[in-house]
Image 1 (spheres, rainbow, N blue to C red):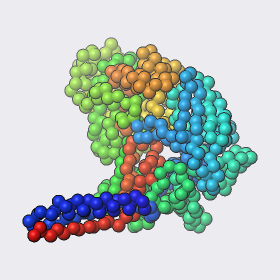
Image 2: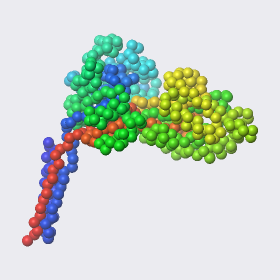
Image 3: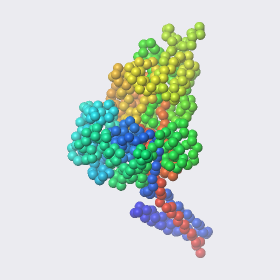
Image 4: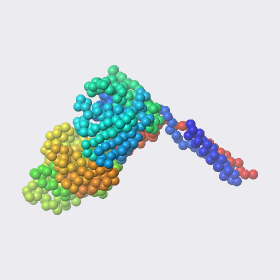
Length: 565
């Protein structure tokens, strides 16, 4: 109210000034001042989620996106990240890093409370991390093994310290996980926590708190959240959030057009056009943390041409990636030119974009000595080796269509490609991990990893048993990546990653294709929505505190001046 009264006082004083200026005018003037719209607390938002709820627990939602979406509003984390991937304190008021890069000390906000009114303490964080380490919890193995190497202790109620075995700059990524209340779950075995009613009546410390479940024939059909007025940060304008669950995109879209909900999270391409045609809807789109690319097995002795950078460049220039994006992805992707996402703090524009240029691609092949045999052979040859290879790809309709287009593009260069469709699990386990492939079309998922850390995918030490599936053996690149993941100075890390990206653009050890886009639709009655690059689909709620449906009444004040006699 003080703020509103101050605005009215400013208007009143301004009118006095205007009246003074009007004195001396020969003709009466009408001056209209219209108050600017100001959001006020109140209202609600209902969103359709495609899927089914399981457990609203941040340690149990790794494999269910719709649970993660809701949990992102109920639970707080020590650290959050902005849309550039830079860390900001959430529960953590501030933090410090020791000179050797091994110890991280955090101070928790004094005004952080659980939804039941109890204060959030360091013990809650230690309790959550200890559960992550427990072999009986269904935590992803890599996360569990990581935390087993980290010691965490509470120094007092509001400060705690993590000790790492060695410096590791991406460590803050691992703190972007919801914290659980120790006072409600202490003493329960992991199997009891998994089965606990807490998972359907959760208590967190985030901006919204659980209110009730909606049931349809004993099946959860919706969840209601309400604003938590004891939240330590900016409090949302919306007083209620509702989520309703639908089995597929079409039923969710039907609910939107029928007015049952006001938004849909995740608009697939098959219903995108209908959303675009609806004047009552706003469509928001942003890049997902995923990268589609083609791996070339650089260590396959039967395919020596993959070792030649100019051949890899020719293959890249022979790909009409824009056609793939426009026709197969309905425009819902961004052209990719490297392994680090644009807008990320580590991204460097190398100006190394490889445009579609089949004529230049043919020239590069000829300059490298690859020719099409005069006797009518279809594959380009050099020293008796034909440019023939197999491209293994996911067996989805979309990626099969993409693979077929790649096959067609390369056939125009005289490169013969056979296709093999396999499940994603088989592609990873039987081909990539065993290095038992020639070329592979893949989509890498970097969800919930704001720090780019390309080390696992491109370092020499990851060639044999790690994730360097291309088997790129480059000592200079490996040194850049080694240094970048242990340095504390952000500017120094940026410099190393810049060097890495320049080297990648020059060598093209793999062929980047595109970054997929995530779209969500919101009714025009919902204001204040904005979205930046996503590290997870739930990041669409990053500015939920600014969403609003209600505004203060607009003031219209008119002043009429009487001419000076």
